[in-house]
Image (cartoon, rainbow, N blue to C red; front, side, top):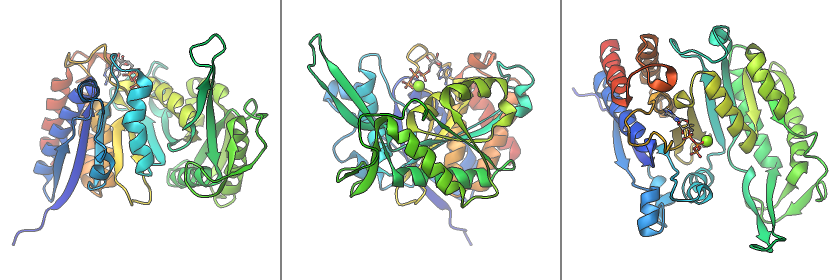
Length: 385
Ligand code: ATP
Ligand code: MG
């Protein structure tokens, strides 16, 4: 009797620059994982939605791209960005529309010290640094609201309006509290800049028919949004008496992350603030090249998307030296999300056994290239199972 193998359909979007190298490496590792462990398989479909595509054809993804993605169990994303295309075009053509259309309103970015990896903070960080950053992924500073007037004149005025909704804040807070509650330290730090972003020109709460979530919601515009963010945080906190909470301003938070890493555990922040803090977190844990991220639709109505936090890194693109660890860790998060817990744990163990042995790329102080690290992780998987 043959047991039926569980099939996971994965859409792969390698994108640009080192996104292509690390996606290839991740597919190799995932294939090794499924064939070694058995019981499940991945069916990969690759989409060439890249900046090259845009330059030759005028678009990143075709007009039915989002509905194509809906057919998959998960999406694996490399990186997007090219020196030949302004960043705001590439970002708003691919990654942001996918996150918004597929309701991926949470971006989870764990950071901890992998074995054999050194922190620029020195040895003291080795045990202390273990965080999960929960990034609001659907609105806030990245709401896409705003405009420019008197363009190309000496009096040009540009606005970029942050939009925070009660619904949008509440759902990210609930996710963050649940995350904190599930971790040993049960601690949640909320980050804003609500002292400064407070007295906008808009009324405190204005009804709108066109909120980013659709429908009729109370929306706080601009600077006032941060005050609403605070308010909802304390409201939701009442449902989680066992979670210890504290509040930080984003500027002071950067200092605390560097000087007192041990005092932090789960961190919740807005779209922009969490993006910046997670680059800092990645650097403190050794390199931007190791940090993973999960863009989740927690309702599971749409596929979630997994990607390393780094970008396309044009300076090292095509050299075969990109660190694939962030890509592998992201792949492990994807494997866990589709329900293969044992495989996810095994992949993390394989990654850490490899870094512990000193098989590392240059950004981590090692001398291996992308292929060397990938070979070692594949070998480790075969040895583990
Ligand atoms: P994006 O706008 O797409 O976020 P970025 O401008 O923030 O991109 P990244 O590509 O994220 O830039 O990375 C900044 C620098 O960090 C790169 O130029 C590269 O030198 C280094 N870097 C990033 N990822 C890796 C990696 N996987 N391995 C080695 N070095 C990396
Ligand atoms: Mg970046």
